[in-house]
Image (cartoon, rainbow, N blue to C red; front, side, top):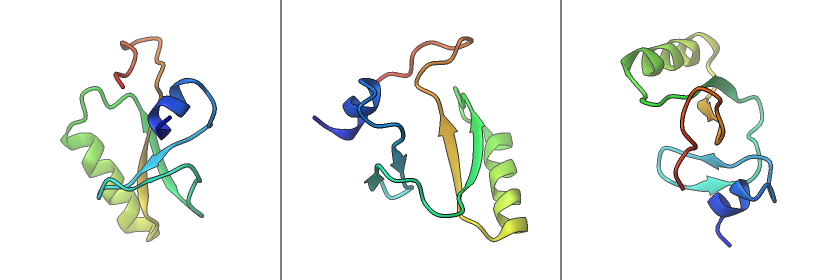
Length: 76
């Protein structure tokens, strides 16, 4: 079973997908996390994360929930 399916079935608690597409089931040390539904993602989301990365020097990640009460279920 792939990591996305394992996330949907709650076998794992998190899945980190890097910009190059690599996947990890472990959370990086000192991540800078911007949470939201990002559905759709837009320039404001990207600018906010880039500004925070610039201020802290930490690598930034978007935290996206599979389930969100205000949005449809995230597709696999």
